[in-house]
Length: 540
Ligand code: ADP
Image 1: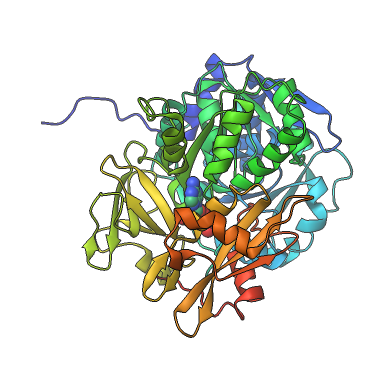
Image 2 (image 1 turned 90 degrees about the horizontal axis):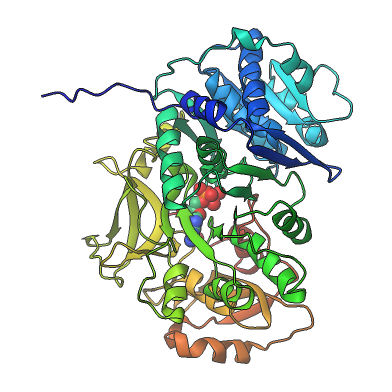
């Protein structure tokens, strides 16, 4: 017997239509390059997104054509994010921190026809625009429009909103595209369907309890994995959206949290570490009483950081794990209810773990002898499947081995899974240290080291060793005015780890190199300290 329900398409137009009808007066606020604030309501946003959809069609675009963006987080980026897929096109976010050669490759490979770019980022775009051969370049913001480009405001003004109608776009059609940063090999394109985005947005809304009453500031860039879906989940429920523009330093962010009464924010651990240091230096500097939770993900957050926010500043952290290939959230830890009945310290332990899978994401992990037990001890590579997980990369036949024969995606993360489905990421397969045949988790060592009062940041890498094949090396950044010796740090770690886990060497540096989205760039550290990255692996 068939179900007799409507075949309603779960798509981005449905998200915009709802916001347009219900939340016209909710606010969207963006920080401009000159630090002034731009404000308008969802009604204006929806009107402009619809006109952009019409205007892109009038430029000659067809269904499924790619519209690249090279922008900071702000309302024009949101208009493109939503306006392009609503018109039947595909938003393709380019990463403004990548080398122009990489963006040339990525935009060419994706077949991008239009580029929407911040005027302040034109010097960067100019280095690859001609090489890609975009048919149209649309320039956003105040100031001079580069020669040959169309001004974004003029483009929107030229479009007639009455020419727009909400279309029944097939939910399986592509809505957005994002390349993984390709820490190994060439960048790979992930193509999000309307359906994946809609389901994912709804999941984020329910798990994070996002509503019209919220004010959300995504620090995570919109060019990184759908900004963790916040542009879609906020629009779906009419949450006030606050965009930081290019101002991502701790003081600017804290000021925005206070003045806009932000209730939820999101960023990678390095962003929160910077904010924590600033708050520690000036604990009464800002009124953050509106802040309900700060979500962290993209890399493992140190437990000490989660605890410090809670104990020193009364600020709650929600921790999520995800991947570009997963829309991106895979697990969420620290959601209400997860810590019921636990003491404070155990609750922080728990929140430092990555958490259980979100609804409709299934997990399992594979060790050398097959699928591992969910005992919180056995380690294996995490595999996932679900409606918000990629089924292949865009035009990359060589990457088919990232999926198992029965269609699960191999994440490349080595994890343990507890009896209650709580995932704990031990390492990326390529970062683990294998010493004397035993695995050592660099993530566990880093997080413990970052709990030492003298250490601001620590990254652990494998270095070749004649006897043990590899040994851990800790690269540390000291807090200003602090000092620590190798012996002191080893003694600090000793109670928590087996002896053979303790780093062989410590190196002290001014700064740990970061990837385009603020994660530790371990390949660079390996080149610097381990002799040309000799121990880099792609498999556990
Ligand atoms: P990349 O880092 O390769 O540019 P992604 O942003 O998609 O691309 O990164 C996904 C990876 O980031 C995961 O496979 C995992 O290794 C790491 N990661 C993400 N969130 C967490 C987390 N909360 N804890 C530990 N690792 C994380």
